[in-house]
Length: 282
Ligand code: R5P
Image (tube, rainbow, N blue to C red):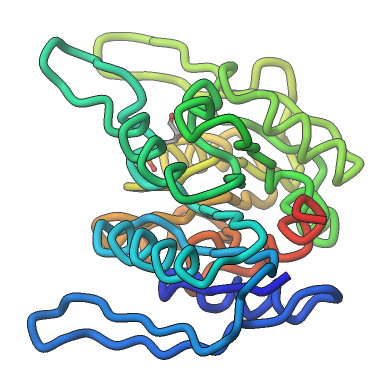
């Protein structure tokens, strides 16, 4: 399969292309003086199975993906798979109040137009997958996160709430440790206690796993309280490290270790999704 790597997923695209059965497309890209995107693919893609890999965040990367899909489709490939490692707009997945756009479904519909199949990773709400079209699949990065956490000697993996406990359970299954979820209890008008439903964290190395870390507010609050409850070490791990508003230093202050995958490439992207993407594509 020939990998066409978008600029938002360069490291991940190269990592996938280095695996057996994959190669990297030769292409030229540039920005016009007005910043509009240009691409020319130099390989003969006729009849080839092509994989375009591009995270759709921030907004210019969505346009870039559409242009990459157009360039690939003009070269008459055998099939086009679009891999969207981090799907931007995933959290606007319904009309929360009347008059709002349902951006997740709208973006998915357009991304699915020039693709035979779509692959996403830990999409925020699985229920929007049908908007991509008939051949869309979501895979989880929690197995790879669990493997990494096992190498850090975690005793237990926690999700920030009951609604996301499946992620903690998958990561813990892969790490071979226990899991639990955090519960919020209002103590009084100004105090909220966050603690694991059943687990005693005293003296333990615990990891909190989430699909997205954005402002870091969820993880910072939880980590502070786990430390107060006697946790020896608190690790925060997520699939998609968005880190809005300069969240990394604040998170690094509140946790002993901060980890993410390479769906969004940053200084914390220590866990690669390349092998699970390759496995899903084969
Ligand atoms: C929420 O539903 C998500 O799973 C994350 O917990 C949330 O996006 C994290 O946001 P923040 O880092 O801003 O607390």
